[in-house]
Amino acid sequence: MEVQGLCAGYAGRSILKNVDFKVGPEDFVAIIGPSGAGKSTLIRCINRLVEPSAGTIRFMGRDVVGLSQSELRETRRHIGMIFQEFNLIERMSVIDNVLTGRLGYTGTLRSLFRAFKHENVRHALTLLERVGLTEHVDKRADQLSGGQRQRVGIARALIQNPKLMLVDEPTSSLDPKIAREVMRLITEISHELGIPVLCNIHDVQLATEFCSRIIGLQDGVKKFEGTPASLDKSALDEIYAMEVL
Ligand SMILES: Nc1ncnc2c1ncn2[C@@H]1O[C@H](COP(=O)(O)OP(=O)(O)OP(=O)(O)O)[C@@H](O)[C@H]1O
Image (cartoon, rainbow, N blue to C red; front, side):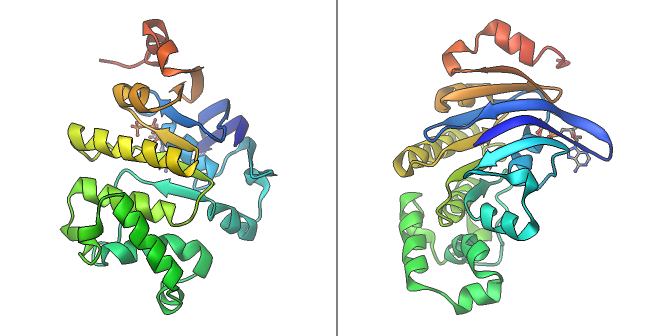
């Protein structure tokens, strides 16, 4: 995926300013920066949950920004998303929540469950085993802990067979130990399945520990891009310069 000259905002207020970067096939890219820097906005522009006001987003050989609604639906099938608040359907079982990840292919919930394909169910069970939830497949989502809920969110994103994962603050609702486990799981799976990841994360320590490349945003401007090793004090000062402590 290649982003060039990306600008976006809300109600005439400019947030992202001319952001450029690439995500290669083996990348796990973290976006860090102070609160309000535009990290979530950037992630959400990639699949046009937020509409960019300028720039291009090349993905699978096309510019996402110029796609029609039906083309966008088709493209979104290839982009898995993991959310801070998990976004599960609380009263549904774990496995049914995972199967909703196939909605991009089947259209509606009813058609999804009517057209329950055995291969999808098998795939869901395999993914739930991989994320360590085999014993919980029939439980309701609201009976799980935060870390378990995020594991359901990961399996739901993976059942799309995505070519890119967008991850929006996956650990903010979790305690530090569980947050580290969840980051480790996402990193391992990304390597195992060869799926590149773009991950918005405010925890710099987790970003440097798990990600292959880091982008630092400040007030919607890219102030840093490099490896975790090159994220030194002066780079951090530059990214967080305007943060009031
Ligand atoms: N839907 C919206 N409507 C209007 N303004 C918004 C909307 N979403 C975000 N903003 C504003 O855009 C700016 C960037 O928000 P964004 O959530 O992208 O930042 P962030 O870097 O992810 O912050 P945080 O780390 O606090 O989540 C903030 O000033 C925020 O208040």
